[in-house]
Length: 123
Image 1 (cartoon, rainbow, N blue to C red):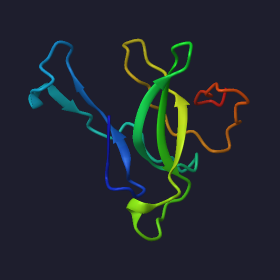
Image 2 (image 1 turned 30 degrees about the vertical axis):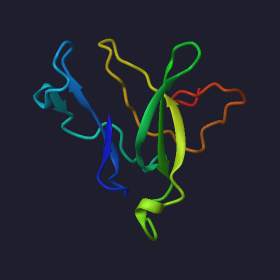
Image 3 (image 1 turned 135 degrees about the vertical axis):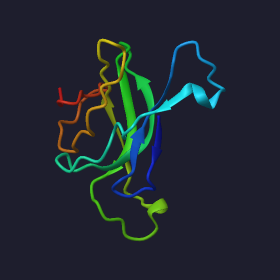
Image 4 (image 1 turned 180 degrees about the vertical axis):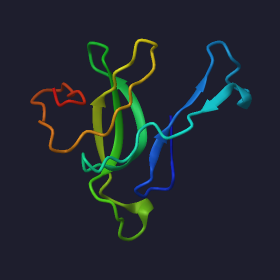
């Protein structure tokens, strides 16, 4: 994955893919997603998601970790915006092994009382 489009409301995540067994050092092996895969979601109140990483729960469930903010307009230097906060959500995969990116979860989802991470539906 990569993040792009500066740090404003259009900041989003894209994906590069390569065929299994291809030469990963050859730029021609890589294909860029035609559109961003993880973008701002006004319904969830999440803007500019990106700068992500991956981890997993103790049971092996994949988790997407990223940062986003809860407003559209940045005042001041966008590279020094102190309100981009880390978020984490379960990242499901389809039957072909591809991530189902979904959308950033809202801050209003229930907060777990343990180290478990809630899925996109908040459960």
